[in-house]
Length: 292
Ligand SMILES: Nc1ncnc2c1ncn2[C@@H]1O[C@H](COP(=O)(O)OP(=O)(O)OP(=O)(O)O)[C@@H](O)[C@H]1O
Ligand SMILES: [Mg+2]
Image (cartoon, rainbow, N blue to C red):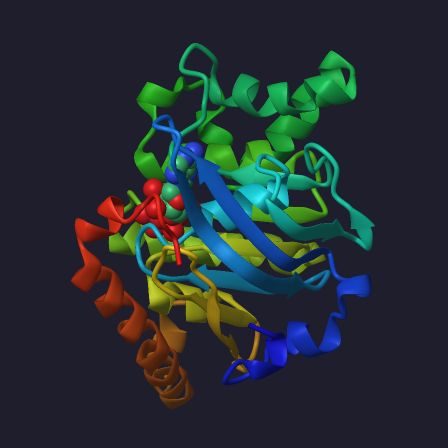
């Protein structure tokens, strides 16, 4: 589907031509080859651009291909058709200009918080003392000055996410990819983490692609919310601009009338896809070999 066919083109879609985009997926199809020789087409015809400085959330039913799109932007998956452009250049191999925060904890249990953050600088050849200093600064920024010597099992889920954030951001990636990063956290901690993320992001606004199941979270954080259809061969069915003022407090903003209006609009697109996915249920796995 062409971008202009969508119900509402986002700011980034309009402002960020693929040439100027931090990430530009153009006509991207991704098909997986299954162990039994069959194939499963997860996504089809994806056109999605994220401008430098833009915060874009991706929502859609479970299994529709949200992580698959992030993996394509990260260079972990090569599209079967179409192109992935990063700052105007075709992506070949891993996207070294991106930092990726996975849903699962990826901290090393045998290393302290400080060492977990410091290790991110190793491939860049940063001298030990400087790396330790920068890791301390980042742990302070995420509110963990008092926890630098703790091992991951001595930290709460929210604290571990803070360490992971510091570990990703210390490398100063130009593009940030986040896959349901706050999924396992309770609602209150999610809000605290959301505000922390907005605070960090607003200092030097990187291009950010954020996958979440939580539509309220998506709206509260983002400049645009992109809705994916149910799979197989999922596409983008809607692209909404969130014209709410910044800076935002993600708890307070949910009380505003404009928030409810945009929530109603996006949910009208999303619910159709969620219901389709639900109706297909287990059957979706059975048609896996034959995407339309
Ligand atoms: N390596 C793979 N081989 C075969 N199929 C895969 C592979 N990776 C993903 N899929 C399938 O592709 C589809 C999209 O998967 P993906 O993980 O991107 O979904 P998602 O939207 O992130 O779901 P969730 O919201 O549950 O995390 C799913 O049906 C999944 O089973
Ligand atoms: Mg996923």
